[in-house]
Image (tube, rainbow, N blue to C red; front, side, top):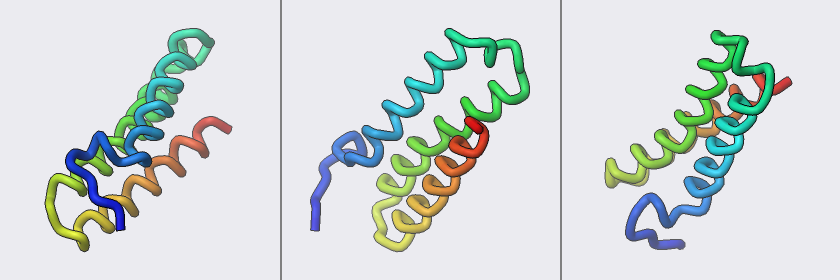
Length: 84
């Protein structure tokens, strides 16, 4: 099993962070910036993904970490759906 020192070491968190940055650039560089509700929703759900990975890790227990990973997975699904 992998051992991490900080949540920043978790590859899933790193990928979620990169996704969040991509969403930010997409909003900034496209007409999505003018759709305030969708912009806020997709920006929030992409950020929530990385936040839930971090929060679950920081709680220090495997059961809670797994629960927060499930929530992060749901948030990334929400982001993917909004991109359609």
